[in-house]
Length: 450
Image (cartoon, rainbow, N blue to C red; front, side, top):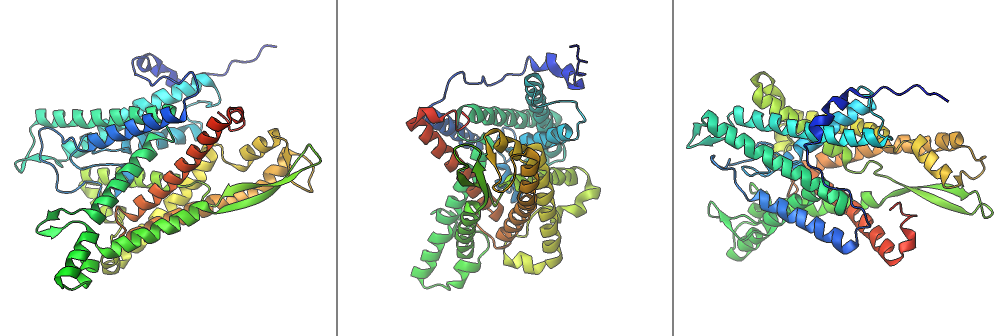
């Protein structure tokens, strides 16, 4: 039977260019637990080394352009990874939106289209690195001797920023194919962990004062100084340490919550069981995407002075002093972040195949049904929509609210960073546990989707 050929996407014009774009080869065999661990550790080590390599030709900025957003973006001021994961995440958001809106004619179920999507997304990430790096360089963020940079030095710095972003992109691809989780998540966790340890335990001094909150607390205690200073001083303090522990415990508890749906297996007499849906259904994805939007808006406000009125609302007030000092800014930031998280949560469910229809089809193919109902994928979809619809909105609402409140309390490494680190680590733990089970019982690999 002759079938009308589906028109190809206009993005196929990029195919000749994509042939010159390097790609990490897909593994042709099962990657063992040990190998995955080594590749993940190597990628993280290389990333951390890059954070310590300063940009050649400029003075290191006193602070990061992205402020507290740097923890979410895995950005390190004045280093090769100044842009962090920003270009990758931004390219991913825009490409997913274009696919979801059917504006580029790609069907990700088709192998050719999926390969093209991946290639164009990498190309777009490089373009975003040029744009974001160019905004910083041409906007005058970097100086030498307090003076603006000459044009040739600006081009040199831009080249370093783009190179750093490209290396991060390929490290992310390496981890995704040969390691645990994704490079993006790994780099966020690595950056947040090192920052929390540094702020809490650093024995070094800056301006004659201990950097670490805990060493400063004991130093004050032993010297007989006022302990209130250890809790209220600027920078890392004991209130931040307590807030960090509190945010960590709340995040672990919320990540472990499940909503269980009753199911029955169509065969073997209708054996009954429960299908667990995570309370944080979209996990930390919405807040990562929201922070990427904030970062790009900050770049625009820096490049376009007329938009600088937005800048205070794109960075969370840090600590109770800032929160109480400007309650209007606090409220606007809170509402903006929560709204974006809810919107991205809904969007992610529809784009990532996590909606009621996709879950219902998956369960139906596995032979499951809802007890008391006939086996029909439409019935299951309607039943699941009661749960998944609510969990989608609720998870975006909760992660946005927790992220904002954690920042308001002044947690070390930013409250958002702690939340992300916990969520990503929890997902990594689940993946590692599955990998260990499949190593012990190879026959289970097919069941686990490997």
